[in-house]
Amino acid sequence: MTQPLSQSLPVSFRRVGQHRRLSILYICHRVPYPPDKGDKIRAFHEIRALSERHRVHLLTLADGPVPDLSGLTELCEAVEVFPVSREAGYLRAAASLAGTQPLTMAFFASPSLARRVPLLVRQKRFDVVVAYSSSTAPYAELAAGVPRVLDMVDVDSAKWEQYARFAAPILRPVYALEARRLKAYEAAAGRRFDRVVLATGNEAADFLAFAPDAPAVAIANGIDLDFFRPLDLPKAKHPTLIFTGQMDYFANVDGVVHFAREILPRLRQRFPEIELLIVGRSPVAKVRELSELPGVHVTGAVGDVRPFLARAWVFVAPLRIARGVQNKVLEAMASNLPVVCSERVLSGLSEGGFENGQDLLASGDNAGLELAITALLEDAELRVRMAAAAHGRLAGAYKWSTNLKRFEDLLLEVVGDRAADRVELPAGPSAMSAAAGEVRSA
Image 1 (cartoon, rainbow, N blue to C red):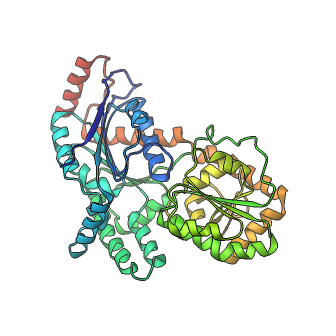
Image 2 (cartoon, rainbow, N blue to C red):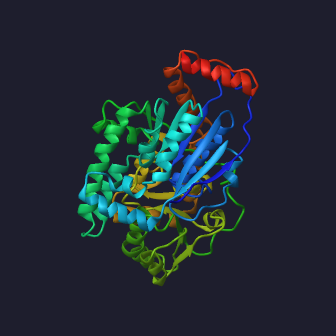
Image 3 (cartoon, helix red, strand yellow):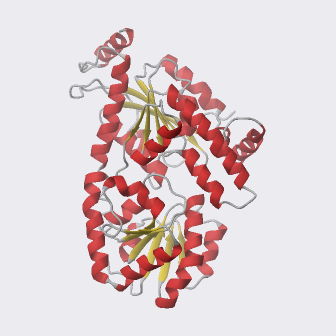
């Protein structure tokens, strides 16, 4: 039986404004480090923000190689990693087709983690447990008596519904089945958690449409404007488009393959020297094959995406499958790059005040995307103006410090709902333990 990899740090205590310092059990479906892709980025920033004023004990699954954990151990009181085999996960998911369990839950099943949660809860006095993504909700429910918060991020069942539309015909019934099963699970889980968090108001509305009694709220993502500050590099000599992302992720593969094969050839008729950069790790065969097309470059993993963004003329996000906020688009905007995207991508940004024709260009069909890209490639002034407008909106809508303060306040509120006393604790381990016990006995 696989045992968890554990790294612990000494516990320190300090005063935290007018609020008590929380002991938080945070459960994640993948190691949230390094923060270089969508689900890892949000989880890492939540952990980093919470660790500034609270104690975080991280339990995380790992369905691939375990990375250097130093970026997490310097933040958390303890980090425990529970490896799960992808191959075994796929077999478990296939076997679950005969039952009623969502394939997602079967894939992320870990008996070791399931045993660890109740044991840890008996050993320590956690104030709240955070489950990151619906796939970890079953583990959080094992923390008996502890307030629970589920950060779903996006409505995953709706994503599977989109997969069923665009997948190979043989997979469509499987994806549709998973959508139905996961939807039923999400609705039931929503009633068993003290709060359910989603990344956009649209996602929250979609969730409440089938889980009307769930205590759902929206808390947006953020963007590190300092890190993605525009680099002082010359633009590429020829018109250059760029797409970034994890290139074994179904939605990214579907979007960029469709774009390269259906839209890019028409653009080449007007711009014979146009180039498309596809930047991201683990490109699958369908993506690697695109490098055989004129002007298409598939880089695979790169150490730093910023120089590629700096050299490009236009960022394209032609995703036909998209939920919530696309971090890749925020990164492009922070880098002063004009964006052309699908209407699905725009829907995730609309709450941030982004408007089609003012901050970016969006379309729901191939012809519209082609026209939008053409307009930007032919007008340097338009590129500058649209990039500046989008960059100006980022800080207000997608500021990590503001949005994560809301997340912290939500956890404090949940704990406050369960305990009559919310007090500032005096410094020192003994006083902390005594006060925590008083709160629990209230």
